Image 1: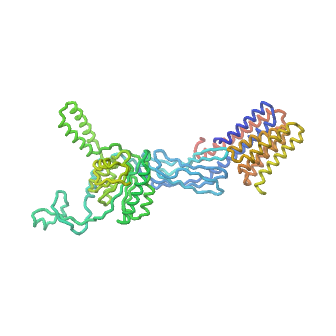
Image 2 (image 1 turned 90 degrees about the vertical axis):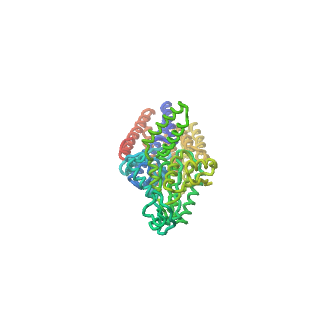
Length: 439
Length: 157
């Protein structure tokens, strides 16, 4: 318990009066000091009595949107607290957040006003699990103060704790045994969603589905011909939003513009195509996938919930995948052929060896695998990627690369403040079909 | 009773008590009591916008209590009661029945305290008794605090 400024002043006054009474042997000063002490003690006892009744009145019930998650997952926690606040007391209630989770947004603490009856308060916030293991919600912290005193108490008993959250590990790289499965899925995605009508006939290319060969035409022309079936031509774009990291500065006005653009595009897609798919990422962290959503209100509420700077549990910095390493090795080999200088050759040789070793051990990023899964689960022929392009763009490269692999066109939308030549550079580097500003 | 008149009423009673003590004592120190009523009344009625006004009110009021107590200890006690009433009213801490009961309890405790002081010729013994009583109350309250924390936090932190 701590004395507030008012009580500190009165205590000092009482001590001065006691000292004066003792030194001067004056009963009147002792009377004043004694009465002041009695008043302070009375307030102290009253404060503690009210604190006791307050703590006894607290009931908390906590619920998690999921109890078993993978590391990096964001989930909502809702705590309902019932409390009766005595008169003239100010009460602050704060959630004790488990270690190794990052709070994304929401309310984790609030103040309760004094009311004669019990009141129900609600804390609702979202957390992102940073580490794996079992997280335990250990309770609440109650901060109480009145005019003279303040105190805080950690409510850790069973009625304020729990539930526990089991967080399973998620690696940075995809296990090698799963790669084949992922690639198979990706190839499966490449099959065109076809209708019954035949749009055209063309020559057979290696890799085409044998079932599509038109045997009559092939026999007539003595060449293999395949049928191209009509497919769904009018597909809504998959909208991918790259949210900025909360831990670094970002251009707020550009972000607001991006949010407005995304909301407008979502609305347009729902109105035009009757559904929309939105993938929300923040760096190499997949936050939320809203696939084939038809309800515009739900779309907007999801956007409202997620469209703000997010906490990142995984960060990329110039992350190179196997194809990048292979092109680096190829560039080194080309340079080796052209360089006569022995010193440079020695340097290039060691660089070649380094890249070679890295390539042998390089696995697919978990983020890349997640992107492949997300792209394969959605039927689309183009991706519109919104990003502020602040910080590292390795994850954007991964997205663009996987989309191109799946024969999906990539359209990048970046802030208007980016110079045109920088935009052209990004377009070339990311292999995007178009790069436009959302100014 | 109209609550708006309570505060001036209590101050009036305090002033009457101080004046009564000054008149009955036939001592020049009685003038001090009358003079000390001026700052106390000033802090109570004129300094509404001052930050920490209550502290100044208590300080000037305590001087008045000492002055009245020097003339007549029971007058000092009466002044202290009135001062406590005025301060509690000003802070809005004399609103409900429980607050009034607490105030009455405070008056009873201080009555016994002053009665004890009246029996002693010197300051030392009542001062020690007061210190011991305060220590005892704080000790028992600490034990209660420990029990509360043990029950709700699992440890006496």
